[in-house]
Structures are given as structure tokens and as C-alpha cells.
Image 1 (cartoon, protein in one colour):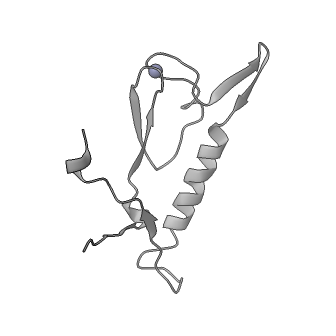
Image 2 (cartoon, helix red, strand yellow):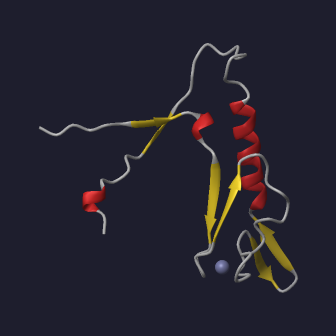
Image 3 (cartoon, rainbow, N blue to C red):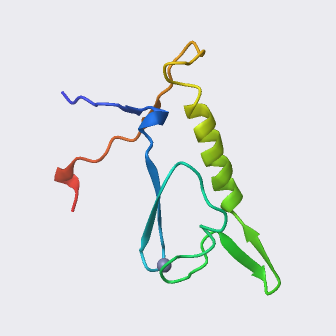
Length: 105
Ligand SMILES: [Zn+2]
């Protein structure tokens, strides 16, 4: 018989996010307080384009606002929970079960 443990996290369990460069694998870990504008433009180490992607020599598309909205929504929701909460429920998110170290490499 096998049993499966399910993992749930609460919004308050989310501490930081981590951006890892696909090119040089340098990582940038930031608290979830806010995201300063321009932070995700390029890799702080090798300067590869991150979220600011040139489409033509004169224009580019910036994906950073998606991340800014995500963090704003997250912090807004976080503020709805806790001792002062008027909501009639607690929220948790299920995450994928971390793989057992025995299967790692
Ligand atoms: Zn890099």
C-alpha cells in the first residue's frame, strides 16, 4: 500500500521569489514586499534580456507588469487573512509534493 501526503501552503508561507537566469544561472532572490520597476529588465550578472524583450531595434515588450500585478494581488490577499480577517474561510494552496531525495540525482 502506498500513501500520498498532500502539501498545502498558506499565502503567508510565501516568503520570496527567485529568478534564475536561463543563460548564466545566476539567481536573484527578492522579498515579496514589492518589485522595483526595472528590476527584471535584464540579468544583473550577464545582462541577458529577462522580462524586457526587444521586438524590433526600436521597440520592446515588457513582461514585468505581470509580475508586479501578481505581487500586488498577492499582498492584497495576504492582508485579508490573519487576526483581523472578516473572511469566513482560511485559504491554502496545494503544491506539488517535493520528490523524495531517494529519487533525486
Ligand atoms: Zn545571466
